[in-house]
Image (cartoon, rainbow, N blue to C red; front, side):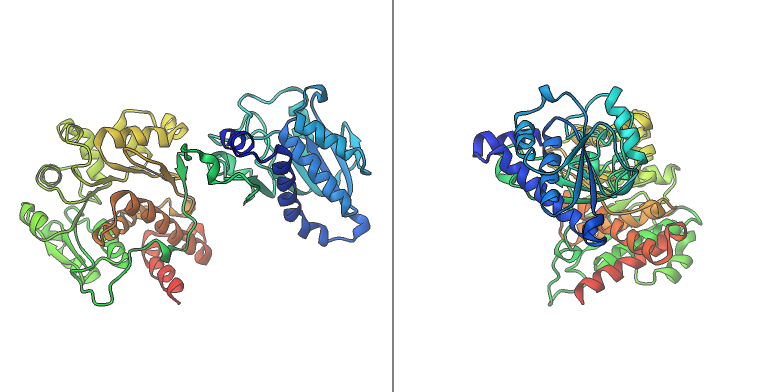
Length: 493
């Protein structure tokens, strides 16, 4: 954002004060509803302002609020002699307006309380007068708005640098900052609004952001279906799932593939699972043998392997056949990932293949990612995307690293961070549903990175629907695949 801001000002030629004015106008729009909720003579605003450009945004907002007959108090923190030129310009303008200045809040409660202390540049522990100010800020009552991001949140990582205020809303400028969507920063930011202030994609100048997130309607992302199509047109998923008398994962993954639009699903599973699968997923074909090479190469369009297969000799035999004997698109999940981590000859086989030769998606949660990379879980959580990108490069695969925020990474290109989903989805079988969704999308012709990115987005949307209907405590994996139909049907209506 610093680069794009600089490019906008220096290369494109939009003045810094023009950007600041538009930022203040965007913030004013967020304040409007809260001012309208009380009588004009009772409207008060406190603006905590630093001496950088974020503080300058706050000063500009103070002027706009003052013009609307709001009683504005500016709580300035920092050394004004070291303030930015834009800040000084806003201060000079503000001298003509009836605002109050203080070194400590005059009231305990205000209509609007604005955090304009720091911008995106904070990268060290907050101490001294700044920490004291944020401690007091946290105790003040009123509707709280942060400009760009709450002070104390690392804009890149979401880390809290000792202290940060919890606000009701954050209006962020230009593009959403990573720290606003990563934990724990996102828990402080409240509702997030991204405001266009003149810093556009033109300012990229060939250097695009490393991450993106979907926010489109799901119907815009799903594969288009031909009106004249048939079950073969919409793809065949070979699902290698379940172990002896353990068919649950196979049921969940198969149903999710069908709900996502796959035309046919064949489940490879032990004979002992036949009756339960025929009763619960009668639409699916069954294969109970162990030699699946022919089915892989002649029948299927995509292979999903791993949900509930266990780690016995049969399971490793199936994984080895899949990895070594088929060039079909493959999704490896759950036990398949654990077996891959334990058998270095398979990872070596994948590592030394020609990049781009095969299409493969890995869907590890943090424990599985730790086993695949040898990195402790806590270290992975501190840089999930970075380690997932390295694994994607090493194994020439797409890696969907699952956690509270799921990152979909590839060998080259931007990373997709998923912003849908909730903690109710942290339940047994949820990952099996995701592998089935991704398999269904692959079968319909999506490329692996797109299938994985849209898959986790759809999976999270379904989980959010369940949470809204029955609560996060009550969410089960079966509710998630059932909710896929609701989302698609609602969009179509």
